[in-house]
Length: 294
Image (cartoon, rainbow, N blue to C red):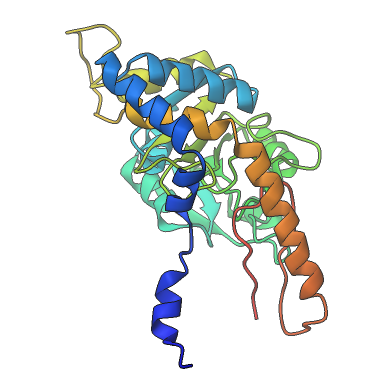
């Protein structure tokens, strides 16, 4: 029997969102219907509940839901007062959105190289990139691997720099001796569909232990307003309640999903251990993608 290879490729999905929906259908449908029946779709109770849940999960004092992960970054940069004339150091091998957000805030992007083992930012290249215009470091946790935050924090303290973590790819990860958010001013993440914690659309969030960042981002995301009909400088970037309701359901399952990914990654590494032409990933908790290099 002949097999149509093209058809076989088309039948194998990369992310499996429809299967995830099928597995959680009862929970997700109940959450979606609850929001629809509430009549409160923007900055309503579902968003407030999810922000509290994610803050608790992350061990942070505050969490703010926004329109997407890119907005999470540049709104945080603006809340921190970064702008024209400031340089911000980040990974050379990150997704474009990290650098894009720095540019949107009016800053200059400075790219630092990565550690060949973890593919995360190399502290020594960060140190070499610092000059009198440097204001912040944005380490990116890539493929579920954590950046070396203790070393980054040490450099930031030495030079008086801000630290904002780009956590779009490592929502449930943690370092060997630290939690994401413990050693920075703020953490930004994305909920676009393909993320480990992804909604059926787009979304993002910031979590922080600093009230002033929380307060400023909340105003910036809502047309500069924290009181009805009173506005100042701001934008329109709000995580809507429908997505927040979906994310609340998925957050309850994130640990089991992360544990399963880690176990599968270990099986891959064991099976590929003798392939000398492959550079295998360095596995840490919070795995997102299993990416090899030749």
